[in-house]
Amino acid sequence: MMLIGIDPHKSTHTATAVDPGTNRDQASIRIDGSVQEYQRMLDWARQWPQRRWAVENARGLGHHLTSWLLARGEQVVDVPPSATARVRQLSRGAGRKNDRIDAAAAAGVAAVQGDARPVQPENSTHALALLDERRSNLAQARVRAVNQLHALLRASCLEGRHAICPWPRPSSCWRRSSPSAPPKPPATPSPPT
Image (cartoon, rainbow, N blue to C red; front, top):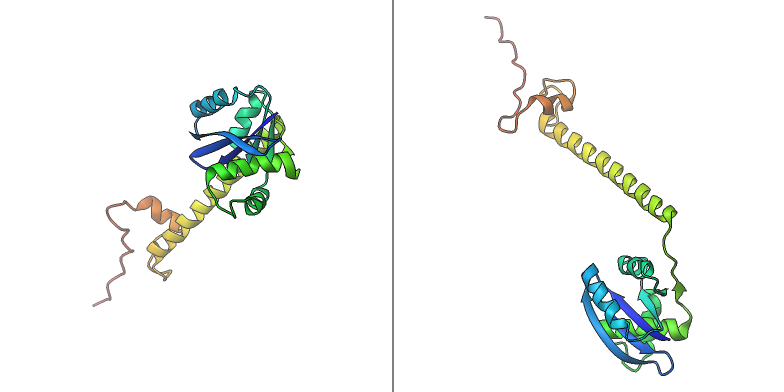
């Protein structure tokens, strides 16, 4: 079985095929982080009929690629970044770092160290948890925006003194004011003559 280590980044991924018997890298490919490029990488990997993917940080930067591979029936293991750093430090490269070496280190961890964890396809529970997290994030962002707007209105309308704003609530100030003209304070009665 050929091990294919993946070093994922935000915009690119590097895959390195490592023979587990000799722990030597056989080939490497670098792709952009897009579905079309994922397919190109899978076509490249088909030269090894028996293969297993070792993705560094499969629940982080490698999550999209990992999900894509699992949906196509591929075997994927998650390799913690700390484990690849350990392998890189102990290798003959004396801690050198580049994407190909990191990908080979991920495959090495999967082959030798035993630190890799098998990744299972996500089910509907995971999808619902992601949707719930997104809903919570949106609600928190809305509350944060309203609070910031309220503070801005208080600062611009009241200017630190309650008597300047003609309306009882700063939100009223916002509704009545236009972007081009600031709200006018209420007229003060002129002193009797």
